[in-house]
Image (cartoon, rainbow, N blue to C red; front, top):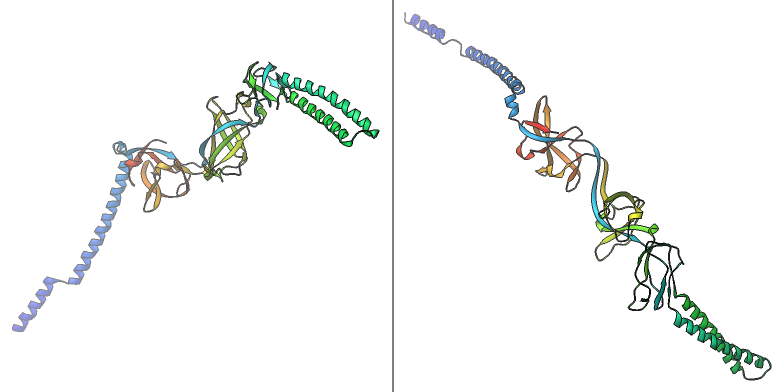
Amino acid sequence: MKNILTIFTIISLAACGGSPSGELEKKQGELVQKEKELASIKKEILDLKRDIAALDTSIQDNAIAVMALEIKEKAFKNPFEVQGLVESDKNVLVSPEVPAKILKLYVKEGQQIKKGEIIASLDGSIAKAQISELEGSLELAQANFEKQQRLWKQNIGSEMQFLQAKNQYESLKNKIKTANTQLGKYALKAPISGTVDEIMANEGELVGSLTGGPVVRIVNLSDIKIVASVSETYLDKIQVGQNVEIHFPSLQINSKEKISAVSNIINSNNRTFSFYIKPTQHIELMKPNLLAMITAYDYVDDEAISVPTKLVRIANEEYFIYTIKKEGDRNTVQKSIIEIKQQFPNETIIKSGLKPGDLIITEGVNSVIVGDQVKIISE
């Protein structure tokens, strides 16, 4: 009886507890199923949120307003400006070689004049008187020389007397020749062809002395040029044949020219060198010492991708720029890592990291972070 009771108890306990391993597998299967259902529901919720964001204008209106610029490949030139002056090698102040008063002026301001043409006649009366005196002495010296020559041929008189007479005669001839040359200087002649730019003395004035100034200025604009000096740091940037733009502030005119020559010498005082431009336009309006503002270029790239330098950021030794990623009607901010090719104060040339068609944020960049939704108010 006791054994039967024991067996019954064991069977009852087994019936009440069941199999522990079977129940665990069942519960694990249910968990996996519920997790799959949850993942599916989460995906559906995310899709619904995206659809709502695209359809709900109130959400779109809350996007951060920014201005953007589409990247394009285009020619880029970095300008720098230097000051130049109009000069002419044929800008001559004409002064007499001998001090004298002006008797007559034969030219007027603005008059065209040829080289060798007489500008003014000067008072050469003293020189003429000296020539007359020398010519009188020459007649006597010639007579004495001819007499001594005849006597010498007849073996009369000494050789010394003959040589003295000959020397005196030839010396006076040379003096008269020199005096006539000096007399020619009293006719003031133009040393070059050109235009009488300024008359600087009047008839009756003493010129050619320590206190007297020049008589006229003659300018020939056929030889005019523009000269500028620039720092030696631009030595490899300035070349013959390079295109430049010139602005004349006083005349309010512009022209495009080419550099015609570059100096081979660096000024040791200010570390600059000169370059020259032979103008081909507006020459008739130019005057020596006229100010010219010259724009040249120290960097040229015909197919450059450039961005404003103020938009370039740096973090962790990497350069980047904020761009806009388009996903349908949704615009979000992203960070584009860039490699810089050349950087200037206003523009930065990009070597890699941006391509034509990319949108960069130009205004409002300080109000956004990566992932923000934005709306473009201007491109």
